[in-house]
Length: 602
Image (cartoon, rainbow, N blue to C red; front, side, top):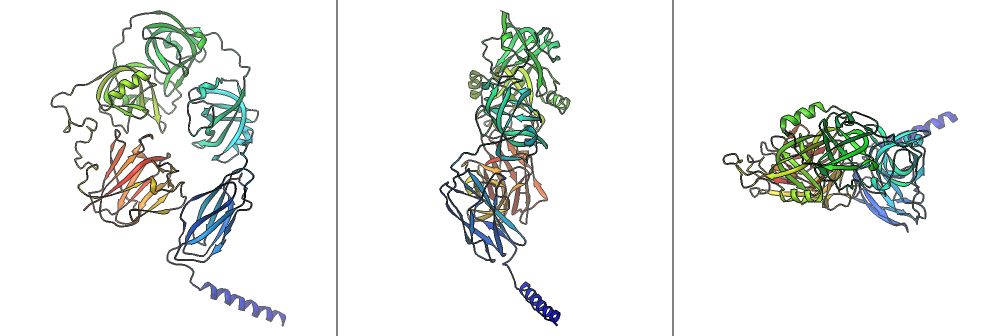
């Protein structure tokens, strides 16, 4: 009898559940989003208001953003809610934080979709870095926001300009990708100021990073302290010719003539060959023609042999008149030959420096001094002036945009994405080339863009089309991890992992999948022009633009016309009646834009 009573009760409950499941929950397609992706609170506590849009019933959770964050006392009001066709005001409250700075991840979840924001709160204390062994450090997850303190011995010092080496303790070894004297956002090349050498016991702080899935210390790491090691003195250098010296591993002593100079050393030649003497702290006063003895350790960097000197083995022994060998033309054929022969390991000395002549257009962009070599696409290879003196910078600045012929020494090949691209030259002479009759392009009055005479529809002067500009002012302060809607000139766009990080001049597109799409059909698009950030690298091949007649197209990719001088890439969409686009960064590198200009046809 009792069994029947319970059965009837269970049936009644089941019918209630079934009935409630038939009630409609939601408005339109499942969607949940917030007005911003991150919020900030002072250490004294307070509250932030979040505008939540949710077309399904939702609930909120407060989670630590990292393993180091304590979110005690942080609450969300209300903590759940029903579906709505209007934004809902959510309040996040935090008490006084007498501990370390912290970050809370506020997760809003429905049965179908979810969204999250980060609430950062300042703290009364500075968070000390956790002290780890190398083994413990390697077990940590990649995280650019957490610094760890490591102590170990410097081994295999590979680069004394940026500070790249192995840090070794009794538990293991890890590669340090750059060390600075103080905490910095990027490497300021202050390593040479620290006076560190192999064998020193170093304490540093850095983040758990990785490159091609290989663990390393990132950040860049910065210096805390060190104890001088008991490294045995280098053996006395062995005298030999330049050609023999660059093939050695132990210390060598070479004598030769200074053939060219730069801010980080000089080219030294004898009758057997030429070597670059790389000295990050170069302070000698040598001149071209000085005969010197140099003792140091041979090595290779960027596919090219060099010698790193020991300061106590510098000695000037005379001066002679210099006679240069017949130059090798560093042209398209030679560049293709060297790129093909470089191989995959840029730390192998495939090449030695040699005397060259080069023709091309000087391009000065902020701190970058490059040469667009005649007959070579800039996306394939480019000349680069290596470690210029101030006098050389002034001379090249006056020649910006001019076609020149120069002589100098090939120094090395710098890589782009591990591919040999930038051919570094220490230049000796540079002369502007006079224009020859009949050989100028169709636009002789604008030599700074001779590669584009075939595009008279230059986007800077559109034929009175409607132009919509997206810049950093439209972007959130940090990367939204889910597609977020923004509005520019009453038009809606969707973005994923695109932000400005409070930089008023940069639209930052995160690596590996960030995108911008338009969500409104405002008419046929004539073209889209991207202007890259003037202080960042210009790699238009990192972005792909798709065009179509539906939101978020992914089939028809449009190839751009690029101009490295103005750092612009223009996509011509006039070949069809395209009304939608998707700009996506599928590369392994972040891309920095100043603006995106969308030009609509009449």
